[in-house]
Image (cartoon, rainbow, N blue to C red; front, top):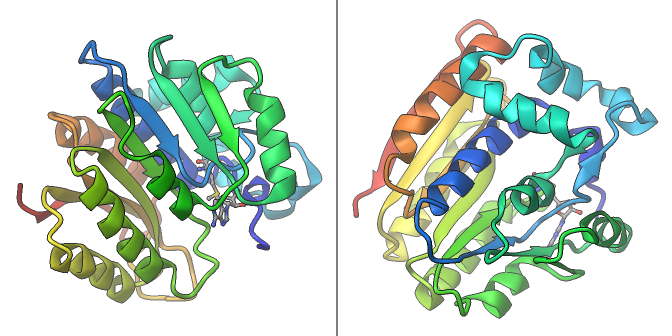
Length: 270
Ligand SMILES: C[S@@+](CC[C@H](N)C(=O)[O-])C[C@H]1O[C@@H](n2cnc3c(N)ncnc32)[C@H](O)[C@@H]1O
């Protein structure tokens, strides 16, 4: 486990993921019934972008750093949340801050040091619990939840070369256990083939109602680079596509290079 999110926190892919996550949390809260957020690869929850590690890559300067002073309207809610929370928030902090007292957050993080840091970060949030365990295992352990509603964020580091296929396999099992959850899967776009194969595997598993929301910073031709990022969603909340479109477009305008694009595509029908 070499991946540490501190080197990447607040980069363009985090901006896109976290801005969309805020919309998903709001969508879940349109219903009064409580729900579980299961964050399978949670990270440390707060990131100091002035740290040596973050400054080493400087990725945040090309991401959230670019829009802090003058955010595009579609990213204003996200930027305000970041500014209100101080240190750059990770997904469990965005979620815990948004949740109502009746909602619940379960966060799993496998890296022992990061899990310990996350546990300290999440201490103020009474409705959050942190588990030092494998995120794929957590899917099996915590689904279906007693609340009967769940938003499941799966955000692996993609260090393993078989991450896409491990993801598809585990997701198929989790979906069988709890098919009504809103599953949100972050994925990197270096080139198209692995993404296509991943969605094909979901189709073969019989999973329904899948969309992909993607932002390409540049055309995905140089396969050695992170050219863009996507969120795959199973059971996207009603109206999500309309809310996501201006956020993705704002990413194109703020972070895009020549040939940048955004797309929301239906992959599997309901
Ligand atoms: C991309 S980062 C997560 C970022 C976080 N979701 C956010 O948006 O703020 C991936 C995290 O997964 C952790 N990780 C790696 N393998 C894992 C596994 N098998 N189960 C759970 N966590 C894992 C890494 O230590 C890292 O902190």
